[in-house]
Structures are given as C-alpha cells and as structure tokens.
Length: 419
Image 1 (cartoon, rainbow, N blue to C red):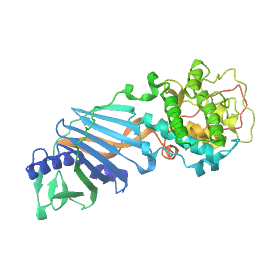
Image 2: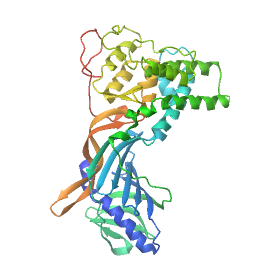
Image 3: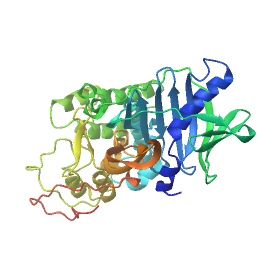
Image 4: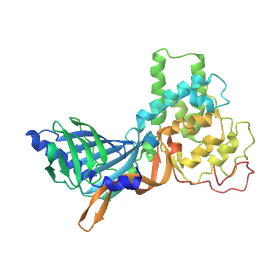
C-alpha cells in the first residue's frame, strides 16, 4: 500500500479508537473498565506495529510507532489537552551489538576481537539504559481529539466515522474501510492498564543530549556494569585488555580538557590504551586548524576521521562529552574505515547508536487534515523536520545529506560531496 493511500484511508483512526473506548466502557456496565487501556495495533498494510495508551481519566493518548525500516527508533505522539506532541526516542531493546558483524568490519585491534565485541556489547547495554525515555526533536502542535460516534450495524459489528469495526464476541478485532473493505488496522490486543500512563508532552530541554548534569553518567553506567561482571567472576587478562582499549576510546570522547581526567577516574582506568584508534583525528574537541594533516593508513582511519570532524551538522551531547552528527556524516566514517575504534563508536554496532544521528525530511505521523466540514486525523508521511534515528539500523533509513564543511589546508583522498 502506498503511503498516500495509507494516509487517506486511516483518516479518523484516532477518533475511532477513542470512540471505541467509550463504547466498550458503556457496553460493559463497569464504569472502571478501560479507564486506562493499552491497545496493540498493526497499521500501514500490516507493516507498522503501534502501541496506544488511552487514559480517559485525563483525556490523554500516547501512541508509540515502531517502524520496521528504522528498528531502534520509536516515534512517539502524545495528545494531551489541546496539543499534540511528537518526539523520537530510542527503543532500548533494539540497541545491541552483533559480534560477528562488528568483527567482520573492524580491523587493527591488538587482541581477540570477539572479546572486545563482548565488552562493547555490555557497554552499549549499560549506556542504553541511561537513554531510555529520551525525547529528541520535540514538535508541538495545536490539536483536539474528537470522539467519533459509534453505531451498531449487522452481525454486531460497528460503524465509526466511515469505518467498520469488526467484532468477535464483543471485542473489536479490526478496522475496515467502509467503501473498499480494506483492513486498515488489526487490533491485536486490548487490556486494562493499571500502571501510570505518562502523557506529559515534550520540550526542547527534554533531549538529554544537551543535559550537562548527565556529563559523567555515561561513564558511571559503564563502570557499574563492569563492576557487576567482575563480581560475577567474568574477568581475565584478555577481558581487561579489551576494557583498557575501550577506555582509551571513551576517555578521548571526553575531550582534551579536565573532563578526560574525570572520565579516567570514573572508569578506574590507570592503564588505558591512550586513543587506541591510532589516528590524529576523530577525538572530541579536535583542533581543526592546528592538528597535523591526516596520514594514509591501510584502514583509512585518519582520512575518514579528518572528514568526519568537518561534518556540517554536529551538536555536543552528554554535556559536550561526545557528538551527535548527521547520519550521512557518521555513515561516511563507518563506510570509509575499518578502524576498530572508529567502528566501536560510530559503526552500525557502535555505542553512538544510543544517542543516534540526525536526519531532516519527511517522517510518518498522525496529522490533522482540515476540511470544510471539520476534518480528520490521518497517518502517513505528513510531517517534516529534523529528527533522530537510533539503533544499529540508523544508517539504512535516513534521507538527508548534511555533508561536510569545506577545508583547503589538507590534501585528502576522499570525496567531500558524497559518502
């Protein structure tokens, strides 16, 4: 199904779900039934799982979409009051490292790659937890959710805002276009939800990438995870070597200032491998004017890092200890070097998957379509703007190219107009 068709057909789904909630409450005779509920739906021709949280006590809705083409990213839309809030957050269950894939692309590590990949996996898992619930790229719009009227038609099925809702034993199972008989959404499950439903919207300040109070949280999470594994006896000479090398990578992220000393202290790193990439570039706070020009290496690391450091889209994250760049810029590094340290940060399986990369363009969302008689909500690629991709597959779904800032000081073998 084409996105435009999806958008037109799923026009009133927000109002339909709210109408169904009130209908089911009334039918049950139980005033407490579905006061708070969780709905699992599959929309967009069976390709897009969504989870809906509907809170009738506060008239709020939270919709989480999990696009298959962008696994690791959750698009969250919240309706509360007369506003709609949209933001992007990582699906921490998808943040992972495929050791075989990592080792197939990473070269130059002076030890057992499987061991360093296992340690990187543990570090990704530890830091991912600190990014759970991050709200990046907040968009706030005026929006009012109307409750669609529900009426019973043949065989106990329902008609809601131009859709048929097919019922089985009094339970809605699918939403069908009344004219084409095409299934618009499958209702996989409905359940009372006793937990709190957090629908509080978002603001620009909610993106933890700019939160200076989290400056050392990144290192604390890694250090605590390692201590737990040491207590379980998961320790040997090769493991400690891998940790020392990774420490060199992480400490370099802290920049060339006193924060590097704090990072070293947090990781208890006394014998770390100083900037283990073997490159002059790719470190936080690299001096673009005075750092020597990149040299030619068999893994392409210095050339790729030199270009990466000139990315046209880059914002400090973790209080300035690292950087979130355009997806094309990060991918340009990952595709142009096999350097194990560069891959450990910015490769598909690198730790930067937790804070993601920037894209700019269209993305799927619920959007209000105004009509002379009022209007309706529709789902599809109707929203446009800067947004963040997370997870190991973040380089497979972006659409915009930010490119690199021009420089003339150094000769380079790489194109600065394409990856």
